[in-house]
Structure formats: C-alpha cells, structure tokens
Length: 264
Image (cartoon, rainbow, N blue to C red; front, side, top):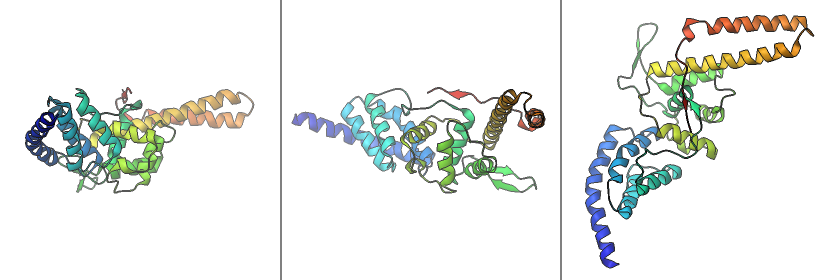
C-alpha cells in the first residue's frame, strides 16, 4: 500500500509540472475572471486530464485545477471532477440541460459576460460614425429591458435574474438562482464554442422579437375565436391588431434565420 501511495504521489508530481504549463496557457487564452471564461479554460484542459492513466491522479489534478483557476462554484467543481475521473470524451456539461433556442442561449451568454469584451476586435460602428466597444451585456440588457422579449419563454426566470444583477455580473454561477436555473446557466456556458459577436447578438434579439410577436398573434387569434360576433367593436380592434402584427413580421428589419434548438 505504501508503494502504491508513493507511486501515486510521484505520478501526480510529474503531471503537475506539465499541467502548470497547461493552466498558464489556459489562463492566457481565456478570461478566467468570468464564469464563461472558466468553463472554456476547463474544457481546454479536460482532454489533457483524460489522457492521464491513473484515476487517482486525474482526481488530484481536477482538484488542483479547480483551485488554481479560482473555481468556487460547487456545481462546476463537481462536474469537473466527474468528467475528469470518468475519462468521458464529452466536454463539461450539466445533466439538466433544458431545451432552449439558439437566440436564448446567445442572450444568456451575453448577459453573463458582464462588461467583458467578447469580440476580439471589440469595435462596433455607431450611427454617428464613431467607434464604440462591443459590450454584449449592455446591448442585451437594453433590448430585453426595453421590450421584455423574454416574457413567457422557458428561460424567463434565468434571464430576469441576470438582468437584475446589473452591469457587473462577475461570476454568474454565484448569483442567487434556483437549482434548475443554475444548471441551465452552466449548460449554456459550458457548451458554447462560437464567438459572441455583435452580429450574432443582433440576430438573437431579432429572433426573440419575432417569437414575441408570434405569441401575441396567437393570443389575438384565440381571443377572436372566443369573441365571435358577441362584441363587434372589440372584434374590429382585434382584427386591426392582427393585421398590424402581420405587417410588423413582414418588416425586412426583422428578417433572419429561425433559431435552432438545443436538445437537452
């Protein structure tokens, strides 16, 4: 048993030197101050951890990485340890990933990013010709708070919590969330490979806007069917609203591909 312990300590010591180098690379490549950055850094390191033959060494490395990366989220630590020790080939992900649209996923990422610049160039031309830094969190908050596009969708409670957190979200996973919302947020942050750009954020806002208008159309149509000929005045108002919503949806400014869905 003593030889087994000594062999473990020696293997861990050798692995630590290599992983110190990898952790430094991960820190340089990803902004580990944010929850999303920590998740991306961990997913960068996971394939290297999973190549280590010893289960005990993988467990020790997972704990050390969590400490050095400043991962204080119990959920993220638990998932890191599970995936590392099990040598799963999948990226870090939570088991309770809900089915949400791409648009919701992008907006949640934007809100969770705080004031961190996600675009490598970080510039977006303003209408007056000046240059502004691309701040995904600020732009997402403006769109959602202005028009309440998240009302009635599956991720409403999570988005509302992120909005209430204000401009400096910091570690979004540490916010006072329900267990379901915390797992959903972790799932969104842990499974995102594409860069968050101004174009993607704008497309997500438009997609949610179309979705909101269609929900309103459905509500109007249901009320029209319920009223029938009982209230001609109200019926006329509803028919006008139905036509107005149809014209709004035909606006070229709302054009775009329908968002896909993430299967849980």
